[in-house]
Image (tube, rainbow, N blue to C red; front, side, top):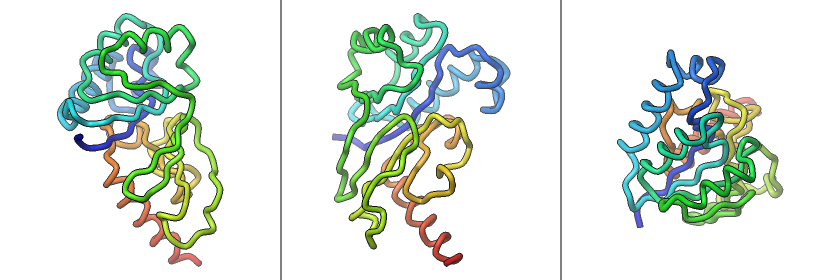
Length: 186
């Protein structure tokens, strides 16, 4: 098995300036190519990639063509733009392992709740990060890595990571750094 990666809100084919312009692109084609290129630069065919929703919007043919070229084994969490028709299309891709609405995932003793929409999870009063259920999500199109500045709700969307997927180790590092930063104010 390879590395474990996370991302969301690719919005392949979403030809609206309010999506691609804040990401630094002048067209949807430029955005699509950059996301595809950056993805395949860091992701190996053996890697597991959790996409937390909104894979494509608008041109489904273009979106499917791009999704089929992405490295890795794809685990899809449904987003608000992932219609029943798009879910059926995703099922035809050879690189898709699973599709679900949300998912609990345990990695190296850390507990994650994967959702498209940010959500507060229980047991955040625990003392150690490994004792908590941490939320990984997207949806907001924010460039901030943390939803509402909360160190336990991490934004994996391409908007927050220069259109790259983010790996598990970096997420844990960022969460630990955020907790230290927040403790300065207590």
